Length: 86
Length: 86
Image (tube, rainbow over all chains, first blue to last red; front, top):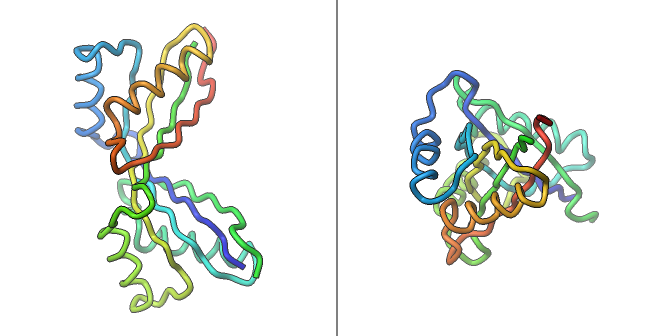
């Protein structure tokens, strides 16, 4: 079976996020008020082939923790949905 | 009311994604098989203050379309949840 995976990473609370801070500072000058707490992370999408959902999830979690994020400064949410049953 | 917004961007289909392609090519050498279609985008999180959910959503959509993505090459999913009722 094929599973679609979305890994959404973000900096841990307390880690400085200059990119987010710059966006936040610019918005009022551009006419947008009332937006705060801007944080920028990454979104990885991929397809995992596995026999069942548990296997796919553990595979996706391992790839995420070992290669996609820096666990010292980043957190990740991994979400998974069935793309295709073969 | 405060609303938490997650904007998840990705390159449109057909747009080359060298970062994703590099990750995908590296995975088998690192011991991960069965992963394909890796695409890398961005994840923006922020908080919007607005009177109701429709206002917050239109505000978030406008910021996304005007400043956070390049609509020529990128798509975005905007999701919104109530963070706090004031």
